[in-house]
Length: 287
Ligand code: PDD
Image 1 (tube, rainbow, N blue to C red):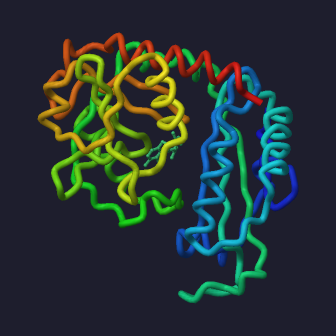
Image 2 (cartoon, protein in one colour; image 1 turned 90 degrees about the horizontal axis):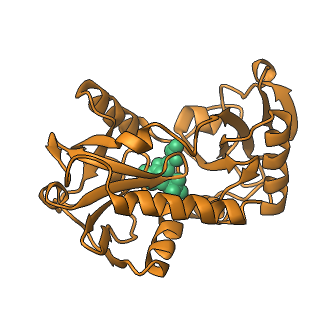
């Protein structure tokens, strides 16, 4: 089945969907994005993603070209057209096509470019990796200073993913100048000590994960203590458990950091429990 994608108001076969070479997203990485997961053919944590999208655009002085109601309708139509039961929807909004290259932002009246497509992942909820866990390495956080804005400039995270791949592991965790881990290449990072879940506090140093917000809320409701502060590689290696969260992986156990096992070196009970609670709750509130 050919994938049907969305470009600027049209639903088209993927090989007929085009964007200009002058698009600001292509020339300047001047665009924002969201990844929303789909379970049982429904959108997971949609409202959080829609709110963060607005926040990212506002931070970049971009005028929002679509209401969250219209966005939900468009996402649902893509899910229907592509018959997605489990998977993800990628949405990208750029500052549009000014018809030439310039460092100056085009006039705010220029129409934005909106692109969206689905990714069919039949075993997203039952991912084999969740049973074995991720191994990670630490790498210096060399990204720009506003990673709280979900922009499409993902070259360094992509390089960090390749560093992980070359090291024979699954992901990289970024380490800031203060020695604390900020987050993973495309996920938020946590450690567990006893009944306490530790993750870096919200700031411009990390993406304000939508999965993070939900998982921390469920963790508090399940009587875990939540401590928002930086933690080091050494602390992670000495922790009982570690895990990462993102719309693409939900709650993913992390079993090794820089070659040293975390806890027993196998997925721990807290990550498993949080994953289960997250999936249950999200399935109940999916739209
Ligand atoms: N990434 N941190 C970074 C740097 C991310 O890129 C992501 C998401 C997260 C987790 O955010 P959320 O829980 O809202 O998905 C944290 C997406 C999945 C991606 O780029 O594919």
